[in-house]
Image (cartoon, rainbow, N blue to C red; front, side, top):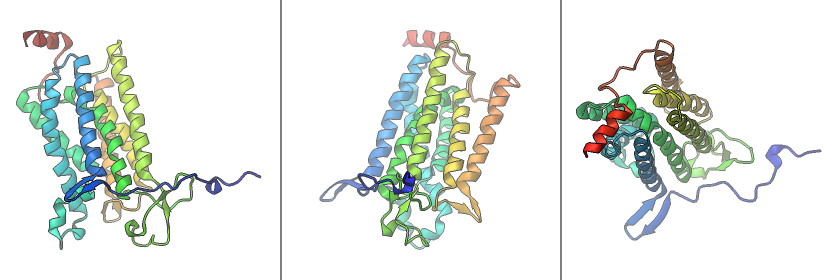
Amino acid sequence: MLPAISDLPLAWQFASPGPILIEIGPFTLRWYGLLIASAVLIGVTLSQYLAKRRHVNPDIIGDLAIWLVVGAIPAARLYYVLFEWSNYANNPGKIFAIWEGGIAIHGAILGGIIAALIFCRLRKISFWQVADLIAPSLILGQAIGRWGNFFNSEAFGSPTDLPWKLYIPPSNRPPGYGNFEYFHPTFLYESLWNLMVFGILMYLFFRSLRGLRLKTGTLFLTYMVAYSLGRFWIEGLRTDSLMLGPLRIAQMVSLVGVTIGLFGLAWLYLYRHSLPDVAPPVTAPEAKMEASKR
C-alpha cells in the first residue's frame, strides 16, 4: 500500500532562516531589501535589452526606472497601510518601517502606472510601447520579490500537511492558528506562477521579432490578465489578506485587472482599434533614424 503524500518524509524543514542576511554593529542588511534592489537592477537591465531589440532608446528605461521606484515603492506601502490602518493608528512611526515588510504589489503597480504615464507624457513617448518593454521585467521582479515574504515568514496560506509545507514560527502565526505549525507557501506558488507568466511574455516578445504581429500594448495587457488570474487563485489560500469588510481586496483588484486586460485585448484584436495613448508609438524605422542622430 502506498503511503499518503502527506506522510512522505522531507530531508529538511522548509522554513525561513530569518529576515536578516548580515548584521555588523549598526549595519543591518535584510533579505527583503536585497531582493527588491536585485529585482530593480535585473529588471532595468532586462528592459534595456528588450528596448534595444525593439530599436527603442534604452536610456529611456534608465530614466523611467527612477520614476518607477519613486512612484511604486511609496504607493505600495501607502496601499498596505491604508487597509491595515488599525495596526498603525496608535504607532504611526511604524508606517515608514518598510524594511519590516508590509507592501502591496497592487499599490506598487498602481503607483508605477501613474509615474509612467506622467513620465511618458512629459517625454512625449508612447506609454503602451514602454509598458510592453517593462512588463516582462515587472513580472520577473515580482517573482523575485515574493521570496522576501519567505524570509519574513509572511504572506503564507492556510494550514497544510503537503510535502512542501512551510514552517511558520509561533510569533508569526495569525490569531486562531497558534496550534498549526505548517502552512501553504503561497509566496512560492505566486513566484512560480509569475515565472510562468514571464516565460509567456518573453516567448511573445521574441516571436514578434520573428514576424508575429503584436499590436502595441499586447504584452502589458497579457501581463494584466495572466498575473491577475494567478493572484486571484492564490489569494484565496492566504490567511492575511487585506480586507474590505468580508471581501479580499486583492481578489477584487485581480478581477478588475482581468476585465481591463481582456477588454484591452478585444479592443486591439476584435475591434481593431489602437489603445488611447499619450503619444504615438515609435516605429522601427523612426527609432533607427533617431539612433543614427545620436
